[in-house]
Image 1 (cartoon, rainbow, N blue to C red):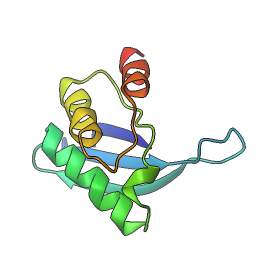
Image 2 (cartoon, one colour):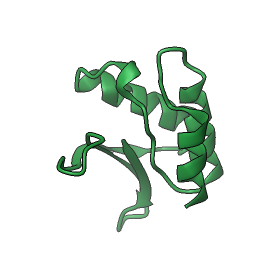
Image 3 (cartoon, rainbow, N blue to C red):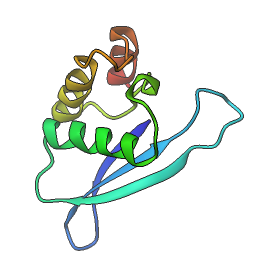
Image 4 (tube, one colour):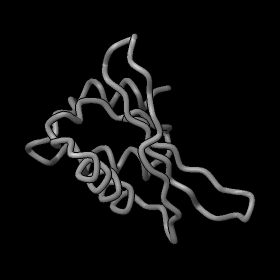
Amino acid sequence: MIVDETMDIKNRKVLNILVGALNPEAQTRLVTTRFLDKCDSSTVANFILDCLSSISLDRQHLVCLKSNNAPYMIAAGRILQSLPEVQIGQRVLTIFRRK
């Protein structure tokens, strides 16, 4: 899963979620876009969980979260990582955080 937060031309916060399989042959696809009033770790984590539910994907299939070094994105990853059914390992979260 790739989570990307940006601003649109009207200066609104936009959160895009893309999903792909851990397979070099698989294409990554935009699943959803949401305009946000605020962009913090709990908003991002909840949006990710809502997105998984909307595409009928169990939380246990979330094994990798790729984002930037923004503190709220790192915190969102930690929130998700704390859920027992989510399989994001500490090493995976650390690898993507460094880039």
